[in-house]
Image (cartoon, rainbow, N blue to C red; front, side, top):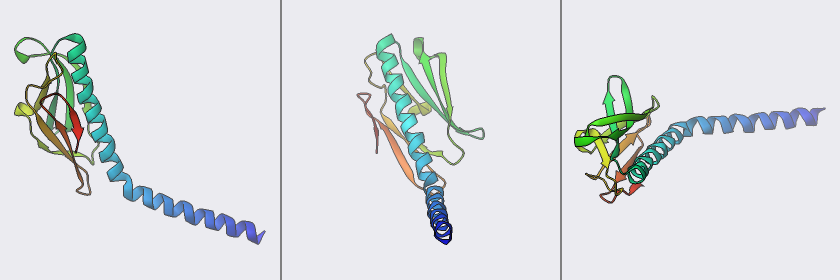
Length: 142
C-alpha cells in the first residue's frame, strides 16, 4: 500500500511540473499559433486571387477594439467588394508593426502583391515574430 502511495505522489509531482512548464510556454505557443494562422490566411488570399482572377487581400487593424485582420475580395479600383473572414488576435498577442501602405496587402490575379512588406506580432512576454510578404507573393515567417 505504501508503494502505491509513493508512486501516486511521484506521478502527482511530475504532472505538477509539467503543468507549470506548459503554463510558462503558453505565450510563445499562442504567438506561434497566431502567426501560423496569419500566414495561412495570407496564402489563402493569394490562392483565391489566382483561382478567381480577382484581387484579394488582408486588411490589418490595431485600435481600441483590439488587434484583428480581415480577408477581403476587391472590386474595381481596389474597393472592398466582399468581406470573406474576420480574425481577432488573442488578447495576449498584438501587432507591433504593420509595414504596408494603408495597413493592407493586396494580391493580384498572378499571385503577386502590389506592395511587399511585413507584420510583426508580439506576445505578453515581449517575444516577437515577423511575417514577411515578398513582391512575388511569397509569405514567410522570420
